[in-house]
Image 1 (cartoon, helix red, strand yellow):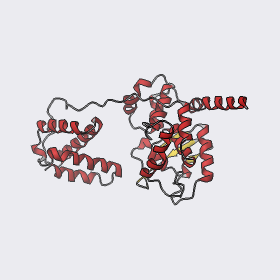
Image 2: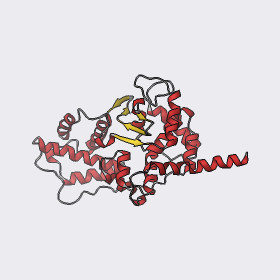
Image 3: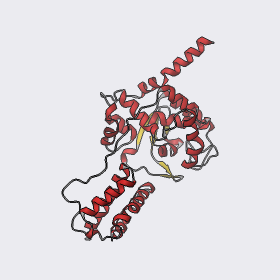
Image 4: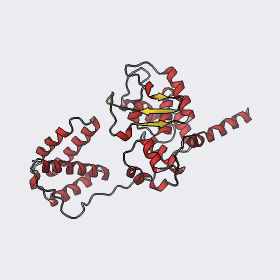
Length: 307
């Protein structure tokens, strides 16, 4: 049965992080209706094609592709443990659905300011951090005070918050130092004065000093803030896309942005942002700060003249 190889695979996932285990479990549940009753040695290319067609009718292309990757992993483990002689994939390419990536438009400086201002005051430095650093949300929630080096305007990304627990990052590339614009440094300095003490010494616990529950954060903070700002389709993860798009449109190199975001492979960036890349550069933070603050300075200037 396919389950035999799945159980073998579980031994390899014993030390995997929680999100990887969840991805694996979901993929197996998606596979079982199609080939769950077959021994791995009995699975044919026809079975695989019918499985992909069935999955494509029910799930997004990215989900289908992820499921097929895990399916291949299970089959290879079947080979390693003598349940299968070779992969039943034939010689022609699998007809996997194509992922159509949307052209991402970064926020304007005015939209950045409006989104931050629409957020409850306690969480404004958090949203500013996401919009200027490219951190993953779990990385930002997992930041500890000792991860800050505000004198050098740098954050040391060393862990992430998953299910209210600090856990290791997934890849070596995710362990990185991220430079910050001046306005973000100033916002974090002010936040340190009001942030409550907490057992993990987190930079961004809840106002009550507890670890963040993402579901509550989305319902009580993020969704109301983006709707108030007139950005109902802007996802929290899009803050990360925003940072990458701005840097690349300024001519920063794929290598620089790859390091900034903590990607292991530059192909991830190339596939998503190739339409926006141009030129080469090594140092970008000061120009990012200039982009961010141009309209703010103009706004303050107009207010002063009006007064």
